[in-house]
Image (tube, rainbow, N blue to C red):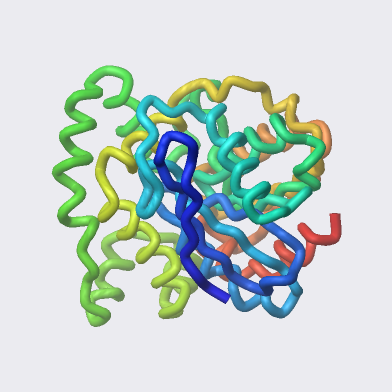
Length: 292
């Protein structure tokens, strides 16, 4: 199962979402990373079908097929999730979030504890506005945070300059070169040599950039801002998965997040990085999530 759907909101805006896995399965809402879009959930399709799970993967506002929402905040997201669930006739559900999808999963769980049964966070972004220093972050993220704070106009211009390049679909023969340029951990590079995994990760990124630089930038800004709630407010069951080789967000940052969550079971995986963890362990992650 894989089909695009559109939900029209009261102001005429739309939210686009795809579905993967089993149409009659246990409902799980997927929160994609950054920069990314709803097709990142292709990573879940095969194991979700086997396990009887229905994956519902929306684009966030301004990303790919979803309308831009001016001045949106993280606190706006749970209402959209509620709208999607009501539209589909789903009473309660679980959430799977990868990387930059983590704040959106936490926000929904904090706002809707009676409908969110459990969440799984995979290589999740921490609350950047609360951490001391940036040593645990990918170098690119460090520079973006600095520019956001001291030269926001320059950062905006760089986003617009990057869009034409990052929207391109490179030839298949260049994929080994791309993986080399990215200087990935060996476990991540090896996982991304799989064609389906490469497409799920990088095509979802290209879709986001093709949608608009403004949407990608609006999504990025949310990570640098206070979330509007404390991690301690997330009281539903949380499964936190993090690779010990994760370069985007260090395992030390994930450990600090796990300590603050009242009902969290964390798994820190050897020889797993930011990309290889969801690629190699998706079946295990989903099976554990629906057991809660």
